[in-house]
Length: 433
Image 1 (cartoon, rainbow, N blue to C red):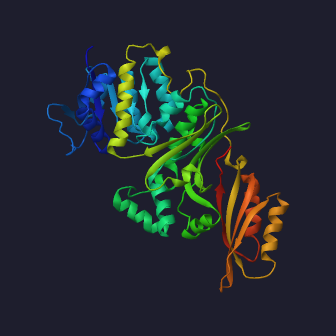
Image 2: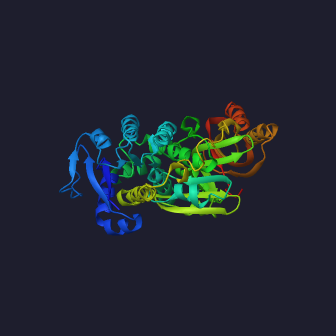
Image 3: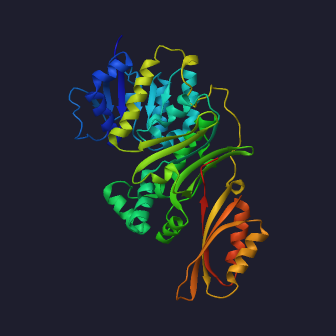
């Protein structure tokens, strides 16, 4: 069979890794795909010294790759939103299949892109957009196709997980660890997407869409960052038998689908609690299989390239299949997506960790517990630290309650004259049901 020609747009970390894997493992990849895969052209503004591109067409116009009649598959690795969207839609309009590692592109523009691909009878593959080298999309979309997915929870941003791991293991402050993460290249100069949960929300949006068969709805994802977490919170969580992780969580409920990213206390015995450093892991609960865990490198040149090249092989294998016999982009057949609503965060029911600073005076704790009791919020544990200061930290763990109810209680607690500053709130998940 004649070779399949690929055009790579972007030769940075992931683009360079993809090129090198395609070159280094060309024979093995051809054996798996059933035909040779050739890099025909590369669109890049900058050469990558780690790549030997001798004999390959290089252009600084990525759209020339998308319109090149010789190319069968366009690999989009430039990142970002709008230019990447225009590039992918141009490639689709020209009858090209597309492979991308761009989670922001899929989360925000995926519905439009998949509709265009369906109309032009081409494929869009995006395994590398979530959790780097972990084949989580394929696992949910194909490996768990027999299951009704109940919920999924994941550590899907390595930067945030590195920061939380360092804070716990070495007692370091958030700002200190973040600065080191930037020096090591784990975090960008502007770390907002990582530490405020936006990157994880992009990925969670994609996973939830595939898990439940709903359109992509990134704008409805709730995000909360880790910048307010202190080393004291990390230590108190440990005393209570929990660990703080920056999780992406999605759960199917009778009222709708939860879609939320935030710091979360999880039991130390939970599989996810042992995932440290820059590693990623996703726990998926299906009605037939139960819980399954997917763990590995969530970023990096070759781990991500592993997923990109696997997608290229998948596209090559199905080039001769008609669209009705291909694996659907979002796991469910087009026209079969559900309109299940996304649940507002106020309606989410979860447990809570509360930390407050109170004046050292008799009766203060009684006022706090009275407010919680009036709201029907049951307390599971209390830690009151003894100090020689005029104020004392109080830590509480509550049973599950609606977010809106907890917000009302916190407002009333903060209004008490003996409560100093804001009440710190972290959600608690046991990940057992």
